[in-house]
Image (cartoon, rainbow, N blue to C red; front, side):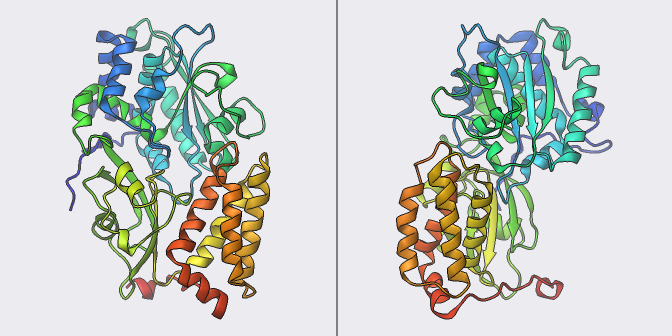
Amino acid sequence: MPVMHSVYRHREAGAPLTDLAAYEAASGYVALKHALATMQPDEVLYQFHRSGLRGRGGAGFPMGRKASFLPKDSPMPAYVVCNADESEPGTFKDREIIEHNPFQLLEGIILAAYAVGSHRAYVYIRGEYEHQARVLDAAVARAREAGYLGDGVCGSAFDCDVTVYRGAGAYICGEETGLLESLEGKRGQPRLKPPFPAVAGLYGSPTLINNVETLSALPPIIDQGADWYAAIGPEKSPGTKIFSVSGHVLRPGNYEVVMGETTLRELVYDLAGGLRPGHAFKACWVGGSSVPVLGEEHLDTPLDYESLQAAGTFLGSGGCIVMDDSGCIVRASLRLAHFYRHESCGKCSPCREGTNWMEKILQRVVDGDGRIEDLELLESLFSRISGKTLCALADGAVAPIQSAIRLFRDDFVRVIEHGSPRPEPMTEAAVA
């Protein structure tokens, strides 16, 4: 079993951390008070950069470097936006952070705002997270009452407030520029970049956008020190990462592991309880549905950015979807193609038309009317979609299907020649 470290505050006993007093008793807001009393904004920003923290939303870009891109001499106000849309299939970690530890997220947002000179922050939360949005609304109100938000945060000269904004359930609004468009009241579609949000983001102003897990990691970095965080895990992928494990495992859930010290096998078998008796591992989308799929030969891959990239996939959002040998990789590919076709905003022709044709071809294969030539047709289609659009949705639609054909080509050929098996239901008897 890997050695566990946690960058998230936990309730030892008594009231849950949704209670402000309980969060304060767990050293909550100590980092914020320390930063406001003893550190200049540039010093806080340098701690973020020195920690090596990489964005946990999917791209893995260094958080401190991203924050440093905001211009210091802009006449426009700066904004901090927390991406809580979390619409990547298989990912549910941010939901749990908000539901059980909202004050740590708020503390991280305020620290980020102080570091980049912002006095207004927004949390863009997906519309389906109504319960979590209410928890966050209550936490914002309580923090404001206690002086952690509003004018003179913690008695300092720094003002900062947070607004929770509910989205309407569009996958594309998880992309940062589509999110900004939606936050401004427009249709959620990606923008042409450059300019990047750091220079011209929300309302044309410098904007820092990070997701829930990333911002929640900031208070411990200031509290314990950047060197403490950087020493956890490998040099290029420091810290811990929460993986949302779902699919054919006995203990699905969120698991926080040390980057690079935990393998995919340990995550699936030691933490998530392994597979149902009588079944073998077949495939795994380790970073959410939009990353290349991995097979059994990749089970001993360490879970960090570089190792997973070397294995041919990406860490992504950490939504680890596990499939055992009862599943059909072809049907799974069709399901993904349907999702991305449905969620394409339609702005870019390669994505709008390409995802539609991907679904049609795979549907034909699953229906028993497929031809071997369809595999070559799909490969030809992939090159006309990937890398040809404003945002990464098209790339995410292609990656899992293209990798599935390459890794499990025999399965596709078998389905074309003999038809697709119906998926096996996961009954209580199968689990027992």
